[in-house]
Amino acid sequence: MKGFGFSQEKRSLAQVIKKRNLKEAEKLLTRLAQQISSEQLLSLLMETISGLPVDDATWASEHLIPDEVYENISEQVSMMLYQSLIDKGFRPGRDFRVTAEGLVLSTAAHDALLPDVPPEYREIFSSEMVTVQTEFPIEPLEAELGVPFVDNLIQRIEQRLPQLDDQQASMYLFNICEGVETRTEIPIMEILIGHFGEDSRFNRIFDLIQQGEYAENIDWIYDLVASAGGEAEMLPNPDDPTDHQLSPQAVQLLDRVYYGSRPLEPLIQARESLEEEL
Image (cartoon, rainbow, N blue to C red; front, side):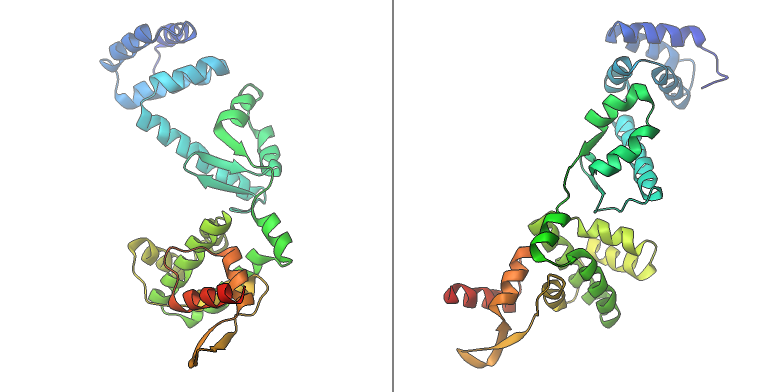
């Protein structure tokens, strides 16, 4: 807003903000709105807030910036931090992730960003802008399985996608992403987006997932089991020699990394067989 003047108005606005005088602040902003455009008014407000102490800036942001504008600013800040983390070598879904509440960071990612935040804003950054998660779910799961599950899964996906058409791939990735995240809280889709980047086919498949377009596919079952360190072998059904089902060991691994709302018939049969055996 530099160049527009209104220095007296900025000082007045800063004073009423410091006093937490919401009525006077709104009155001043209403008067200014009759003199300048909404874009200029927002710029003036943001310039004023940027020069305030943290507590005053926080109050002004919460009370004077429209909700939709505040949400848009928060989203832009999150995306800036997201890109900064990538530039520093941190990986989406592994070291940080985006949630409806904002950015969730590992301790290392938080500590790497903190020096970039002005000292006066570091407290609010750590307490309100981000959430620090000391351990992401990948580490304990992979320690339990004894294999690098996520890296294995990415490798299996890279090998499998060329074998599937787009609709089959949509079902394949949907089941993997939804089922693994539901069961383990690992944000597989976010990890895959970070891994595949601008790959045109992956983005096309991702669009199909969002549109709910797919063709039946069960390859995701085999690849999840294999990624978890097992063998997704199909064994003859003792009650029906013409039928085959997953081994109990494979089902145990699948249950550890996947939970879906609509398991396919081979999975249902395998679970029933395992329950009978146990």
